[in-house]
Length: 201
Figure 1: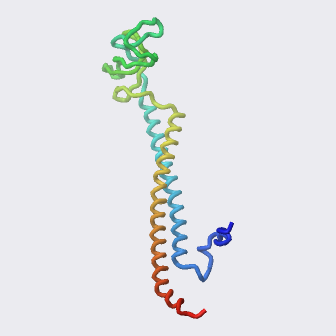
Figure 2: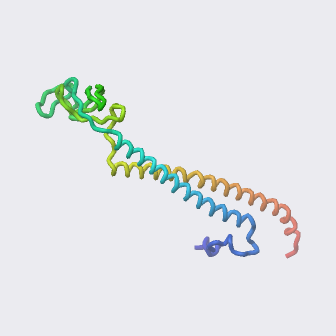
Figure 3: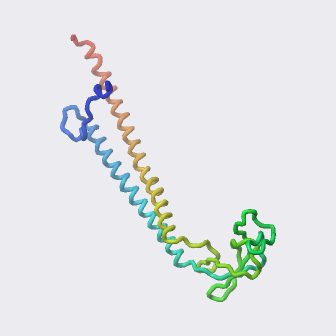
């Protein structure tokens, strides 16, 4: 309470009000604050929207280009089969295991690679794999809901990171203006202080 009484009531937009005590530096600092906040908001929004749109378009291209294909296991998959209870060298938690498979792309050429399958699957078992336009194995494409969530997350992070640049630059500029103002006050006080001390009160 005493601090509030000492500082006085807060006056909004005081830098733009006519006042004999207002200095040019005060007005300049006010415009710097406005410009920094506008630039921060604009940079964050544009960077976030641009990044989110880019991610969503990329994931949409993947959904359009990546296609499922039927592949056959080349050998029995390691691990314990859930159906027969056969014990291989597999996972204790019954998770999917890596195995080699062969699949054929639309041009008729055969490809081989490794993908995750159910443990203990017999050789020749048909599994579904996803391939790109060159026939290479890829992961399952994201669903539209997953793509929206990922794009929103990436856009938010990029927007916040981009907005931090003008905000930090504005704070640095304000700090330099503050130091310059204090230096001027100090030089003025060094010039006028001795005169005040000689004045009779």
